[in-house]
Length: 258
Image (tube, rainbow, N blue to C red; front, side, top):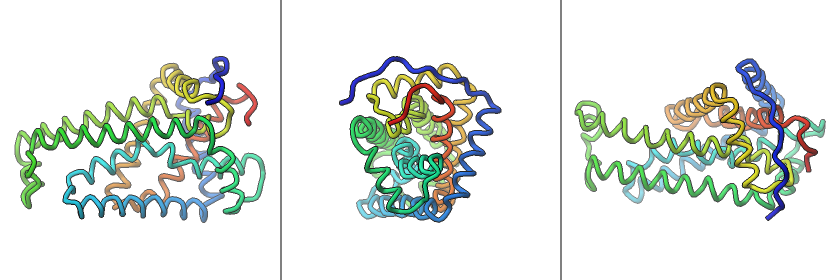
């Protein structure tokens, strides 16, 4: 584990800054669309595979929480897009070789510990989702008329509210500790505790813009789910590039990158 460094100075992030940062994310996507679409397609294919496995093992009721829980591990999944944005910043030509080499350079140290934290959060969320489902519906509650009962009964409404509220609380917590910690660990020689606390400070010092960005990520995941994960082809790369732009804005000049 790397050694922690002194607390980093953060720049303020206003709504105007967030708008420019998101525009920068779309700009990176436009410059690297062939690579981004391929990486985004790989994640969509992975999502289809996981959902197929849930159906095969008679756990279809976990497909929705798994898809929505993708937001918990999206920062780790976006590492390829951090590499693309970093190469663009450095003015280096994009190729699969250069992207893989940049990922390999960063895939060490505390980046792996941070991935374990978010992965564990996804496991906890899936456990909670299963308990909520069994508590409201029962072990054998996923019947052909499940969706009709879900939207037509008071217990179904309570189930939806409880499940989504629990997911939202976990998502906000994970968002707070990871919003810039992954790109920070990707780019700098820093320990994951410092990265998480810096990320939390950014959210605490800029609550409204950061909650808006959290909402937009959740909305993007919802759109991706509604489009059978096809939306991931574009939305995941844009989220990844925007997260990189947010990190670079927030810590611009704080320390020298690795």
